[in-house]
Amino acid sequence: MTQYKVFLENVPSVNHMYFNLRDRPGVKILTKVGREFKQSAALLLKTACSLRDYEGKLIVEAIAHWPNRARRDMNNYAKIICDSIEESGIVKDDKTVLWREMDFIYDKGVQGFELVIYEKGE
Image 1: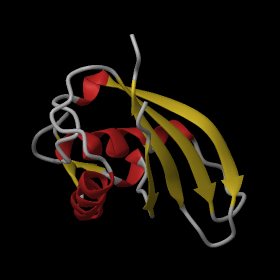
Image 2: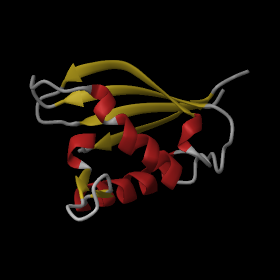
Image 3: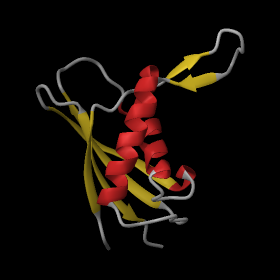
C-alpha cells in the first residue's frame, strides 16, 4: 500500500477561516487567510500525492505540531485540511476522507500537521 507523507505549515483553525455576513444571517465566507492556505496546501498536496479523483475511502493520519502549550483542539483544523485535499484533486469529495488524529507534539515555534495519506483497504 502506497503512503504519501506531507507536512502542512501554519494551518488556520476553523475559528480563523470564516466570517459571517452581517446582512445575510447564517452565510459564512472563507477568509483571505483561509483562501490563501487552501490554495497553497492544495498545490503541496497535489505535488506530494499521485492519487487523482479518488472515490474510495482515503485515510488521513494527522500528527499536530504545536508551537507552545496553548490550548488547541485538533479537530478544528480538520475542515481546512480535508477541503484542501478535495481542492487538490486527490479525492472527488472530501466526504470520503477518514480523518484520524494520531498524536500531537510540542515543537517550539512550529505550527503544522504531519500527514500520512493512504487508501483504505477493503
